[in-house]
Length: 551
Image (cartoon, rainbow, N blue to C red; front, side):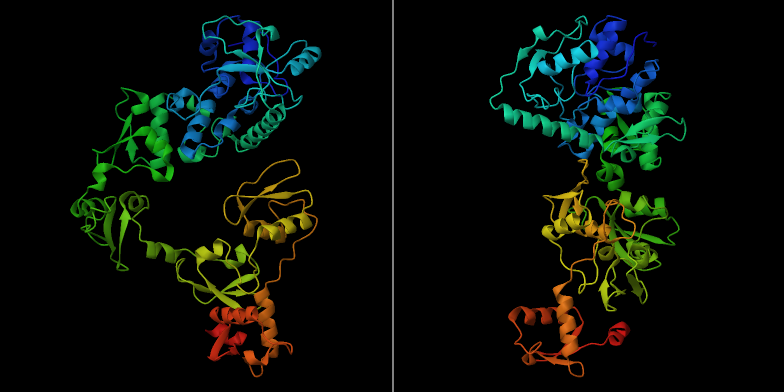
């Protein structure tokens, strides 16, 4: 569809008002006709099928898909939604309807009942561009004042779909009653920042097939939606089955396309009888519903399906079916491990899944994660503790693979971090940054000088990035963080220095002074870590490094 008149959007322009102006100057039709022409829905807050709009309108000055998305209230609408609803909202706005997007499915987001303008912004825009336009920041949810001028907005009911498109006239708008203008202005500024920050969670991806750029959201890969422009070339059924193939590797298939799309069922191919709701499969992610028929399979049917010769797996009767209906009882014959597991988790691994054998194949290279540490002895699996050497102090400690990957380090040298420590470290090493405390324990939100937020980042990850040679987050830091000295390490060094032939008695004190209660508890704690040996009442033997390395 060629538009004779087109223009690039103005600053902070609302998509709804932009499309209104384009069709007013080109075809002079109603809103329903506008929807039919572009193959989507021109809603005030959450329009649909924006990729379709980019394909439909042939004009060199028409903006890109990413620019159209930035003209919507998507950021504010996503705030507070869970992953399932946020995914539906993003896909409904970006993807074409043929992609298998449930436009009618509820996401908890409603469209605006009115449109709003600021009288002072309208006057400035008229002087600058020759006409006023609708601002996105004025039409964000809950906004009643202008963030720029701090004055109440004017409101007008949203035109009916069948009404003719007419130019906006400020005389048709009525003032909004605002009790506290300052509070309303602060609210408008917060909503504007929130919308911009949430939009940053959208990324631009280049399709390897068609070579076009498209906007992808946080859940695009998990829901298998793919490139919107490639999806336009397929039918609704083709896209649904393609998404199921990506997510479940051919395990589910839609065979009957008739009926309500939002209530469509998929057949479980392995058993051929079980059915599951399609959109529950697509948007449930790691909590995907199980096939009811497979859950009820008897051991004989499982044995015939997965290992008919009985060389590797033995399926047993589940004695706890009443309390664990989604579990099957399996024995891995090569290692003898017997356990309960979900049918889908077992089938999701090629050749079956045994946690003991799987974990034993996974390795841990401490040096690649943190060059200050080295693995000692033989690695026996991610659930078994392994001895790790801290090169800095030369003392070993024990930790599992999972604990080390999640931040466990030398208990003597690595001090327990508080928010004050993190705040001080960021202020010292990266002056342009600041950190905001998170509601999640031991997490904070690093904020750049431009206002971009890294949400819910653990304290350990922030400090680790500040101490790295090649930081990934604080790339503009002015110095490397030296770290906080642990009180236990200081106490260990003092006791080791004053021990006579490796023996230290608490009665002898430290540095000629009597041992405090805090120091006594610290010595007992270090003993519990395995660095001291308790040889009497208040008497400790300091283990040598060679002895600890051999243990």
